[in-house]
Every structure is written in structure tokens, then in C-alpha cells.
Amino acid sequence: MLRTGSPCLEIEGLVKDVGPIPSLDGRMKRILAGVDLVARQGEITVILGVNGAGKTTTLECAQGLQTRTAGTVRLLGQDPARADAELRSRVGIMLQEGGLPPAARPLHLLRHVAGMYTDPRPVDELARRLGIDEFASTTIRRLSGGQKQRVALAAALIGRPEVVFLDEPSAGLDPQSRQLVVALIEELRAEGLGIVLTTHLLDDAERLADVVHILDRGRVVASGTVAELLAHRRDAARRLTLTAEPGLPLADAFAGSAAEVAEGPAGQYTVDGELTTADLLALASWLHERGIMPHSLELGAQNLEDVFLAIAAESAAESPQEHRA
Amino acid sequence: MSAARLARRVWQQGRYETGAMLRNGEQLILMLVLPLLGLVGLTMTPFLDGLGASRIDVAAPGILALCTMSVGFTGQGIATGFDRRYGVLRFLSTTPLGRGGLIAGKVVAVLVVLAVQVVVVGGVALALGWRPAPSGVLLGIPLLALGAAAFTALGLLIAGTARPEATLAVTNLVWILLGVFGGIVLPATRLPAALEPVVGFLPSGALGEALRAASLEGTLNLPAAAVLAIWAAVAGTAATRWFRWS
Image 1 (cartoon, rainbow over the protein chains, first blue to last red):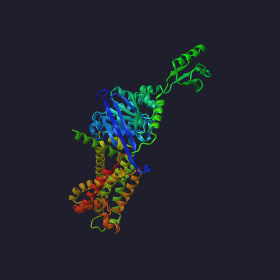
Image 2: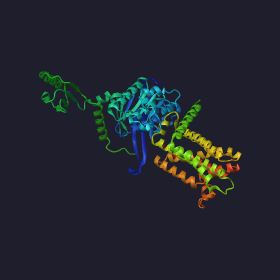
Image 3: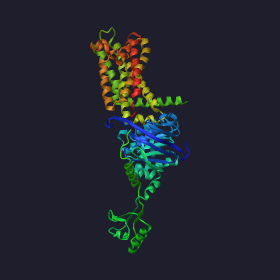
Image 4: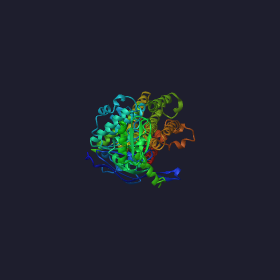
């Protein structure tokens, strides 16, 4: 097992072309246009992007499931395109569509997959942990999407991998299953595994990510911790949100400032603009004079979604044309 | 050490796929029920009369050849086509089993099911009076294996290049056409005159002729065996070249 913090996946200048595509007059379509990223042991690396951004292609090139057009990929120090049984035994993979035979029953299948490894996790324990024992004798084709996801996750973890790839692990999960899955992923991180997951859900990224790479049209357009990405955008727009009794003339508190005040749903106020400490002082005095204590008050309450949308818009402005080779 | 591990994984995959095939009702019909019906039917009808041997002696080797086509071509073709659709091939290829091990496991499953077919169908044929030439039994085993190689390679070629629905339709249709007109069960001399010169070059006709020569006369039909070997080599090369995993 590698040390926490050491790189388990290093991708440099990864390019992937597919085609020729008839609708592009037989030209190749560039899916990845030079992806760079590093994932480390003991960290959760999240690749975030909209559908079609290249998340799955990046993952599949990292796993050796797809060949690459250019660039280098090192998975646990080796080239995944030439992975041998030894390397494959150290890597666990959960594919987006699961990759499970519909006629199989979950426990039977997991025992079969476990048999491919020299020192697998105990199947029953993992099945209990993920609640798979509740539907152990139902064929996979009759399971719900969330149940299938849990079986696919178990199959990825059964061989005690050092690195796991999870392609959209929370897709189709109900809140309860999602909780199970998130808790398990956090536990794997604590055990020192390197975890690389893709998602288009900002919630997942905010909850789990140590490092986020935002992928847009085949390029990493921003990387960092969630806090770093939020800080990166902080100066671009400031927002103060406040909940209190409905119908307050809150705009009066910002009379001398350029801030714009709006009441969204009754009692929920947003103040947008270049806010200063003077504005905050004015707001506090205004509330104090009227004896109003807000229920909540938050400054700079941007979330990853704002960052994501802003970066995507910037990136679109920079490269208006579709990448083609 | 690692070769032993690979062998263990391949054997395990083979056992798993054997179980999946034998638990599937449609596959069982194709692999056992239809060949048995054919065998009994041919002993009760005059199609094979006048060939210088009893009905069952002519029918049994042809029906065993048909079994080979059932399991390798149609059975494994359909199973692999749908495994490909559902991403099962991709997932299993990321485990230590790998792509090579997965294909080897499929070959093991074909051979195990074929052994079951030979025991069941051969047993029924013996009960119905089949008396193969003693040296023919020894010749028959490698010929069945060669036939399995050719038909499995063809099945995987279709499964790896066409959609699973198309694979299902094509492999079933071809099974019926070759079963009736391909020289596998009915010798070429019993087919319409136009087909007679062609069927010897088909894998079905070659396997049927080779097995009948072995069972009836205890001799190796070398041209037929050569045709079969060429089919296995060409289909194997084509499948390796064009098989798509996703």
C-alpha cells in the first residue's frame, strides 16, 4: 500500500480523438484536448463536469479501457494501457452502467468476482455493509437503479484495491443509499485508498472532494480544493443572504450603497454588490435599532455551483469553437 | 505461480459461464432439446436410408456436430453479445482475469457444455443403437474441439461486431439454415444438387463429414479437417482483429 499523499494517478496532456465521424464530414472528434491531473492516495479526487465534458473518457483512459491518442498516464506508476493482472488486482473499478450481468444474483456474482483476487474482502460483510443482503436473491435485472449501484460498488471494492475509480457513484441513489455510499467512500479514504470519482452533482463534490478538477469540453479548466475554488471566485461577486420576518424594508439599510436588495420567498433576503464593512455595520445598526434578530445571516454564500457556472461561461467565451482535429 | 493463478481464474470464469448457460432455458433448448429431437426424428424417418449404414449410425455424428454449433456459435455468441451490451465484458476485463482470461473462460465454458452434450446426446444415441468405430471415438474428440474452436470464433466475431439483437437473430437463423442445408446433419448427397459442391467448404459441412467419416469408418477425412482448421484460424484472426469490447 502506498503512502497517503503519494500520487496514484498522474495524467499529463491526455488527448483522445474518436472517429471518423460521418456528421463531421469524416473528421475525428476530439473528446479530450490535453487533460492534466494528479490523484493521490488517501484523497478523494473529484472530476466534475456536465454530461459530455469527457469525464468517463478520462476515467477509461486512466483504467486502460480505452486507448489514448496522445499524452501519458501513470496508474500506480505503470501504464494502464499495458496493465497486467498484478496492476488490475490493485485497482477497483465501478463503471457507469454497472457492468453487471442481468441474470445473475448479487451475492453469487460478488463471490465470483471475489474469486478473481488473492485476498478479497469477505463478501457477506461487504454485502451487509451496503445493504445488499436485503435483496441478495433477486436477479440483477429486477433491482432498482440504486440497488444495482450498490452491487457495482461492492464489486469494485471486493478485491481490496489501493485505488478505486467510481463513475457517477451516486447516480440513481435514494437519500438513504447515498448516505451509505458516501460514508463508505469516506471510510475508504481514511484507510488510505486513492479515490477518483466523477460526478455532475455539485453536492457530491462539496461533500466528498479533497481536490476537484472541473472538466469542460475535454480540458481541466480549474483545479483545487472546494475552498480554493470558492475563494477564486470570491471577488467576482459578493452576496449576503439573510432570513428574518417577511416584508422588512431592508433596502433602507443600504441606502447609501450600490447593493441591490431583493426579497425572494417571503422572509428570505439577498443583498448583491460590492459590499464593504461599512455596509455590514449599517445593516447591523439597522437591525439593532428595530430589535430584529435574523434567523440566519451568511456572507459570500456562494456554492460550487456558482463557481462551476462562472468557469464554464468563461471557458466557453475563450474557446467558442468546438475542438476538432 | 502467476500462470497457476491465471489458470485458476480462467477455470472459475469457465465454471461461472457454464452455470449461466445451463441455467438458461432457451440455451438448454438449443443445446440439448433440439439436438435430441433431431436425433430421435432422424431414426424414425427415412431421410438417412440407403447410405450403407443404419439411421442412427449416420445421424449420431451429425447431431454431435450440431451440438458443437449450438454451444459455440449460437449459445456463446448470444451470451457474449448481451454481456457486451451490459458492460459485463468491460467490467470483468478490469479484474485480474483480464481480456485474455475472459475469452479463455468462454472457451472453457463451451468445452464443458460440449462435454455434457456429448455425454447426454451420445448416451441417448448409444441407447438407440449407435455403434461408432472404436478408432472413430478417439478421432472424434479432437474434431469436436476443432469444430468448437471454429464455431466459437465465428460466434464471438458476430457478438463483438453486431448489436446483441442482431447477433441473436443472425446466430439463430444461421443455426437453422446450416442445420438443415449446411451438410451438418444431412450428408451433402442428401441435399439439393446445387448445394452439394458448396457444403464441403462450410464449417458445418466439414465438421459433419469429418465426424461421420470417423464414426462410420474410423478414418480421418483430412480435407474436411483442413477446411475446419482454416475456418477456425480465419475466424479467430478476424475476431481478434475486429472484436469490440464496448
